[in-house]
Amino acid sequence: MLKFKFTKYDLECGTDEAGRGCLAGPVTAAAVILPDDFKLDLLNDSKQLSEKIREKLQPLIENQAISFAVTHLEPLIIDEINILNASIKAMQESILKLTPTPNYIIVDGNRFKPVNEIPFSTIVKGDSKFMSIAAASVLAKTHRDAYMDKIHEEFPMYNWKKNKGYPTKEHREAIRKYGPTKYHRMSFRLLPEQLEIEFE
Image (cartoon, rainbow, N blue to C red; front, top):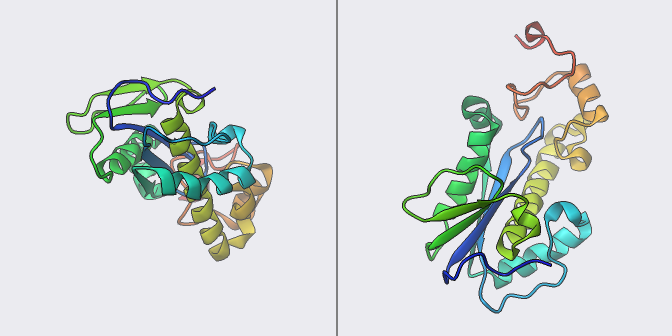
């Protein structure tokens, strides 16, 4: 059962990201401030929900939220600052877009860096404990999936519409056959037996 709030702050914001383990595409984060009367029975950690339910929840969350924001950070940035820093940066940027500014932040996971002077707590498995983090996890996932569906049209041979950039056998076979694209994360091990020389 999801709890509504972690603190007594009126503008508590939850944040989460999607796409950390992918070989291609952005890491996407969302931040959400929910009103006190928010109620959504189906809401849970996005990984526990079917794609159909996530897509059903997305507009309901967006319509009911006091404020929400989503940020995509491209593979070039991921390669430059690493995936952990990129995930945190995407969450920070989403929080900075919120109006009104939250007065407390709850973060899924165990690592975060301050946003201005706003107090925060990191919560392991927070997306299965608190509503605002669960809502952020749904928005991060649905917005990222839509992004991957769009770039799939440009490079259909990798089947991102289905695998969303995750390291499936089919995705890796396509990388082996066609090589990496501008959407691939070059700092990741794209192929299990990858040698540096292959991508020079």
